[in-house]
Amino acid sequence: MPVSEYDRGNKNAKPTIPVKDRTFAGLKRLPNGHFSDSDLANLLYEATEESAGFFRAQGTPVVMKAIVVSGMMQARAWKLVPNISR
Image (tube, rainbow, N blue to C red; front, side, top):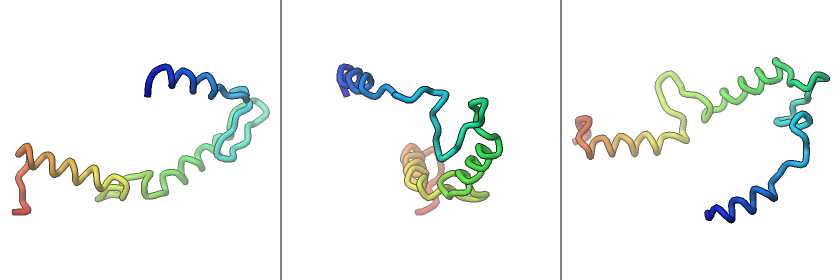
């Protein structure tokens, strides 16, 4: 993307809502403008419950499998690890 196109899009993407009034994920701001600690903690907990959000004890999230396999194949091609499949 050319810089001129980025600049043009960036000018049009300026937010109209002031930062102190913005919300996300359905969270409501407290009177002091902050988000509730428990609401934020619940949001983080729920995000890491999803399989793509955490690493299991022995494994890789499904969305990362192709990257892991690609890395293994490249390491074998560079002879960094023994190829035990043969």
